[in-house]
Image (cartoon, rainbow, N blue to C red; front, side, top):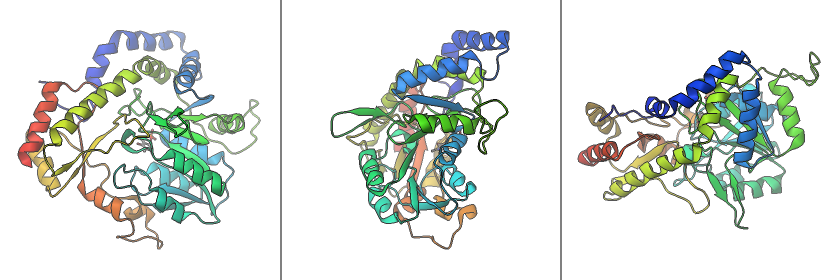
Amino acid sequence: MNTIQMVDLQRQYQKIKPEIDSEIQQVIDTASFIKGPKVTEFKKNLEAYLGVKHVIPVGNGTDALQIALMALGLKPGDEVITPTFTFIATAEVVALLGLIPVLVDVDKDTFCISVDALKKAITPKTKAIVPVHLFGQNADMEEIIKIAAENNLFVVEDACQSIGASYFFSDGTSKKSGCMGDIGCTSFFPSKNLGCFGDGGAIFTNNDALAAKMTAIANHGMVVRYHHDEVGVNSRLDSIQAAVLDVKLKRLDAYNSARQQAAAYYNKVFSQTEKIVTPTLTQTSTHVFHQYTIQLNGIDRPGLQQYLLDKAIPSMVYYPIPLHLQKAYQDARYCSGDFPVAEKLSKTVLSLPMHTELTEEELKYITEAVLNYC
Ligand SMILES: *Cc1c(COP(=O)(O)O)cnc(C)c1O
């Protein structure tokens, strides 16, 4: 059996090595490392895959979120609502731009932003909502879009973990993750569902004016060369990363379905015990399992992690500390106990190995070890 990893990128690469190597070599041979044809090609292919009008490739997912928020014309002191149980990037860019991150609790089943908590957090200063499609499943976007429309708020989706997931609206239409709000953001960090060989990210929008503005912001606020109309940043996806991503994009649906199959195996085995709560699947979204995250019901988490590690099985806690309890984000507005769902999850969740190459033998080995400890 192979060494079990949380994410096995080596094995994935071995299967597509000739194609990847030749695409990378082409970029090297043509020496068009920045803004080359590969970037445009990947952008077009991703637009077609997502069914979205504009994809703007950028340097990473955090930049994508920052550029999105910069484009909305918000003023210092404006409030942006985001969940407290997530990766730090969302709150970080809000704070860096002089905006006020307003944290809210998450839904106990989906781990995504709680719609009730969101409604209660809206004030006259609220300008935007940043829902995070955590672990690969879309947040309750129909409700979120409705609330945003009623309150005149922007919606910027953090789709860094959910690329390829679909959302089903009650009128029978469906959209891809990141393509429902005003703007969607994703990351191509190597371990993401669509990952490159370094850093990368992209912004999605159907709004022409926002697309033009974000394209300029990502390029030093420049439309005509050396004419800077606004303060921008330098954030680019390079050609080598675009070449890798274009090869993997063709396989994204197959990769996501490999993850779903692994998740189905885990779910089936863990349904035998009440000590493990498996991920809740909603009727409105597919789940692309960026992470396979269980909740432990009365099991000692560090003990289980050590037991697994002794059997060479890695596991991770995403995320051990909610944002409102992070040192850098300490704020008189929040204290321990404010967001009970997020705080409970941070103590009980455990993510198990999840990637595109897991074999039945490996899944059997992992699940048997977990059950043995229960
Ligand atoms: C990975 C991730 C980001 C940041 O992406 P980078 O490319 O690492 O900057 C932001 N939000 C979420 C939810 C993520 O998982």
